[in-house]
Length: 542
Image (tube, rainbow, N blue to C red; front, top):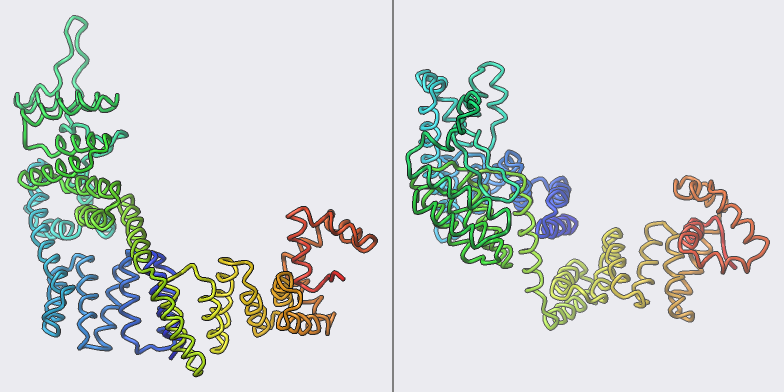
């Protein structure tokens, strides 16, 4: 069905530009027309995943597989959705099933490899979380309860979706305490530098007047105390934008204690401010390796990956930025990183679109479209004109040609959209206005069609097509004045114009003195309102 293919193409275009909800809407309309189309379910699964609605992505992926069990791409969609939901064993099984059908599929192999890597990371994260709980006097005792252990494992499996655990707090008051132990580390800082986070201790009594305050970090080993003191000095220098001094203090902190990831990420923050993006990336890589070795909090790992993404973004290396934002999200999901990820995905789509532009190939596709149009194969012609537009999106004639095909296929809404784009690109392209007028006539909107023909006649007062269309629409608009008045008065915009006392005065003045119209048309707001009344058929200018 041609209409289904058109909806799929519209969905694909929306998906490529990051407009996920529009893509889902078009795929859904296509599915309503062709509920057995496994490709549409697959594409909608991808759109749901991009929009972060992973349960819906999984549902569509499973429908894809049920409609066409031998299509390997369906298993790739299913594996991806399951991985996002933290159901790694099932994801692995889905990818492996797809590879049984198509062993050479690189996308399936890459997906399987990534999920297996995530499984290893989850194991490491689980160990880390249990270590935290074991170190806490209160949660340590709770680990003796098998039900509590199951709850902790569930959180560790997917730490990004804790809403179910929060609901469980109604039944088990230990949940919020557990979450605070796991996630209570404050990573924020206005200058994007990680402040020290020593364990909270009871507030000591105020020192006596003759006694100096107790030194900071007094209960820590000497190397740790010296390292944190250097870090504090580095943070102060960073805030003052004395970056060279900040680097020296962070380097000294690392000399005293090379096991703390924040020293490396703070150093990376300085290099980022200095626009030394390669150095920033290298420090983050060191920090991540150190963090992995010493079981650093996954939020700190995520922050290092995000900083690498920011550096690649500054260097306009969009695909690498996307990779590291995704790595950050796999450690810890935040709205800020999701927004950055969407931004670079849009930039990638834009760059790919630009790279695809080729006016020579566009001309070749246009000629093919013209041949199919002459044969009456309008669906094939649309396909070639669409490819030509992708190859040269600034050529107004291509939109006009495709609009002609849509008119033949009675897809007036799509044709009108192409005419609008054609006239926007070249307001002096008379054929675009004439074609717009014809489409509006086909949509039974003679007043708007009349306006389009007027634009064409302004460019060429003797154009036969424009004159014929104008006369036809004028007859249609004026044939039933009562019907015209009813239709116009039902328009809220027309009602608002007629209620405006200033406009009523102007209209009365126009009746008494037609020459006054020219003065009023110099005001853009008044001109727009008069144009609306003209299009509605309520007034005419002779």
